[in-house]
Length: 404
Image 1 (tube, rainbow, N blue to C red):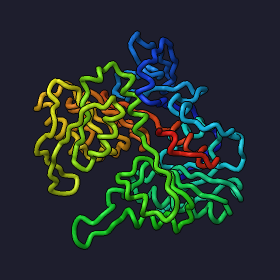
Image 2 (image 1 turned 60 degrees about the horizontal axis):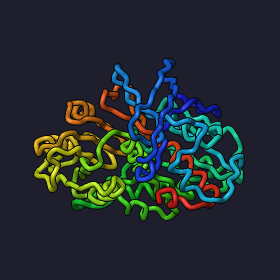
Image 3 (image 1 turned 90 degrees about the vertical axis):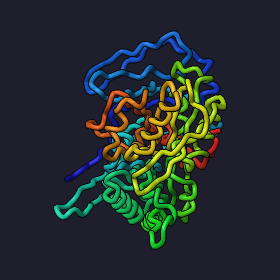
Image 4 (image 1 turned 30 degrees about the vertical axis):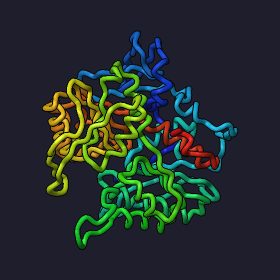
């Protein structure tokens, strides 16, 4: 298989994001035109309180709804957080290259940044070995390599390592590995004797390959940042999902944020705080093996409420599906599932589309195969978030101020 990623960006579909606290008072009465797979669809907003984003599409063929941003404007969430420093957006010393794991997201990031993807030739030999050649000079440049280590994790990880090595040998000044989804992040500690800590191993591999900085999105656990001996910029997909939820006509007094396990309580608490200090509930589960979960009981009250389940990823969907079933048993009116990384290992699609969820909201850090689309699925884009973060890293500006 051969892949040559050129410099021309294709039209992208992205979602704007801003703090719900400042967006609830904004009303929009506009129409937006969208091209999706060759068909043009017209979107009209309703007379309800919404964020300044377009109404999501509802495809009858089961394809996901994808909110769209006017590409000529900066998202208000980022616009309000932008520093006063003048940015040179025509800096030729910034180079953006994409691997083959998620080229669509890379094109969206490049489009937001007003750049063209760098020319790179990536192919696989007959025996499966990976070949990478940069087709333009990167000497003395600030290089950003976009490559999530999503399934196939080993293939994509090895490709990233070879890309880093190619940039290092081409005399790039700085090499930042932009990893929207960091594979092996769940292997971050020993839970039994004689286990490996693969997250640390992968961090060592990326560092030794020649990366000088990591830009990651929603790591499974914060301590994974400490596994790297180089700077790590950790960005969160939470504002993208929060802004979308704020655009929906849901009474915030009816909301309850639910953590699907005890380990995600801190994440759910931070999420609830941004949703007007919504109440918190916790699903207590006991795990009997890898990818096998058993729900035990619920801590908190969800009767008559709209439950929003929050997690960093959905893999086989066993945890979140059993949690949703428990919430319905406890009297929840509707259940929404929200996560940043949609791994969607079988049988996740069957569980998520079984009718337990009103909507499943994910981001595009991992590409979703068309066969995995189902009517309740909504895909939000983190391209603007990653693009703005890349600019700030390149210009030595604050990244944390984006989330304040």
